[in-house]
Length: 86
Image 1 (tube, rainbow, N blue to C red):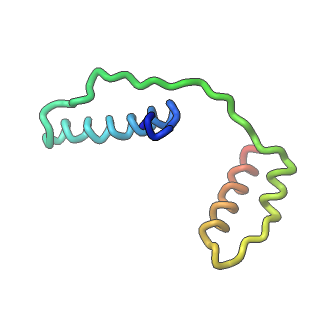
Image 2 (tube, one colour):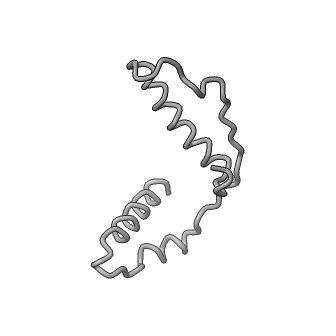
């Protein structure tokens, strides 16, 4: 994953998902032991950037053509989530 230029925290998130699937496979008897047991998940602290209020307003006013329903839904969900946190 690192060779594909994924960042450390992306790798850690994917590793947690893989680990949980393997753990469940051991638990229900599909495999006998966890081949990645003992590996450690490493993360790093990152600085989070936030949008300004003006940027959020620009997104809320963004006109998206009706045929792009997925983009409209994503914009509306983002805007709804942003207003909950304000």
